Length: 469
Image (cartoon, rainbow, N blue to C red; front, top):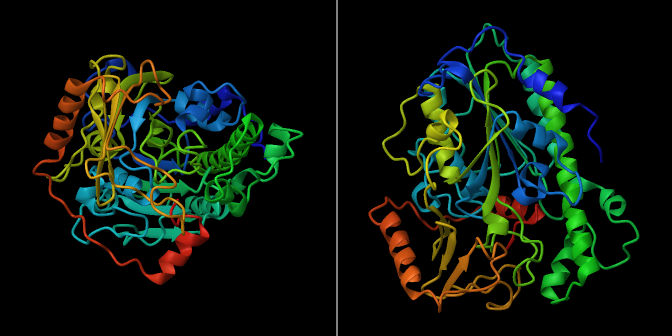
């Protein structure tokens, strides 16, 4: 599947097509504070499911070119090199994006859970500030979403999601006369079984005659049958995934072209991100994501673009978290944040890219299980004090699919693949990082409640391949 050609320079011209001066702040050259600088601007939140940062050209992927439109979008603003998800599962991760809270605090701890009624979210806050709020999603359909003027969700059908978003763009009030908008588009993206790629994997990896293909049963069998993959199988698995990334890139391009044609990218802050990545056989023979505690699933792309307001073509090396997205948008728009926020505005990085020291620690959670990860100062801790043993594939016995050690410590600077556990050699560092985790979550309001997922939603999740994935 190919996106229609569009030169990067022309793409930048489209994104930079703002008429007149920015509506707030000093713009790119003034370098004054950005608090409130985008007051009255539109917001486009574009999220793509299961998108590994290290499979995008913008993050250095050179095996093949599969993301030209997403790369161009990331190049049109500031790209965060080390953004971390708060859970390698879609609903908890996206709920953290919309609330600025860790999953235990917003309560959407698992796929199929819903937002608590009283919880402030971006759509509620922006709606209250006079924004027209619209969401067109391919996943997370029934999460007790509130605050949306327009809402539609398809079961993994990105083409339908994009069409609905563009129909909205063509039919809603003129950007000149209507209120500012908050538009969220979430695409199913490169999610297994990677059908967004169609048959493109055969072109990316010609001649492969092995067991793998874009079918759920073929992928599941690798894990349920403990089928070892050789180098050719792994290469084709990556081709299947890359084909799905390429298909997602096409949908992203179609969406951006249509929004530009409808005049919806003028005076618009664009946030681009993924909810989580994908294992692709990197650890314990696991292919998917929701059982993963590793960087393959937790490191995600994140970028902010606002032509005329934010600098283009720059990167931020410091570690940040997806919980920082909501506070950043509220700070840019000049909207008061709720009292409870775990993330912090990234505006200092947006104002002065390259400054700001080493960044902050990044944490993740694992549903109701007492499992956390901490990324700090180039080290990664997986803390599993009770020995929680997840079952990652339906009908598999515990302990047979994705064992999480009670303590796993990795030096990411020398071991980015997280292959050598140094916990026994670094007891002082291990203890200090455990204390960081305990301190971060001590006293935090906890909304974790066992939610009964309706049978209808269970069936929808199973149809999308989410049961145990």
